Length: 134
Image 1 (cartoon, rainbow, N blue to C red):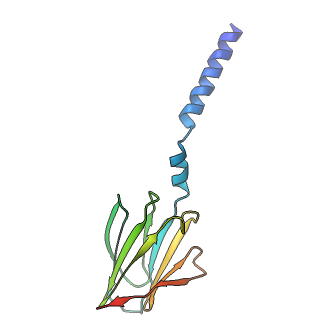
Image 2: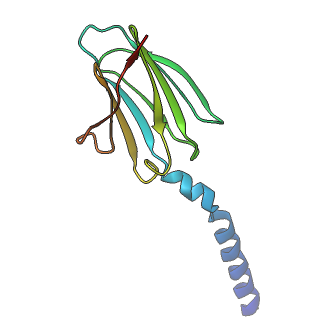
Image 3: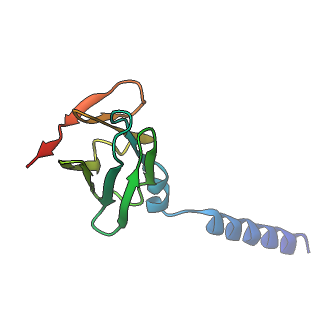
């Protein structure tokens, strides 16, 4: 009878381990960052229009005012391409790209009058892409 209890307990523990185990892909998904695009254009500017997508995910277009941000969670390790339009200016860039960004909790993009700045800590900013015009 004691062996029956031990077998039952071992089966229960095994089932619990199997149910709580997560595939490696799911664990890797947890470390994928959030991308935040911050509108830091001059005061009283028209809204910034941005659309982002990966090979499999279309996030759609967003329009947001100065001081506002557009944020999305990276769901796969594909490149997330973004395109922006403001007044007569436009630009496209990689909002997320592996391996540049995959080990960071967040990728921040600050959109200013002279272009697109990237940061991983919201303190150190690097100009990555200037605006283009026709």
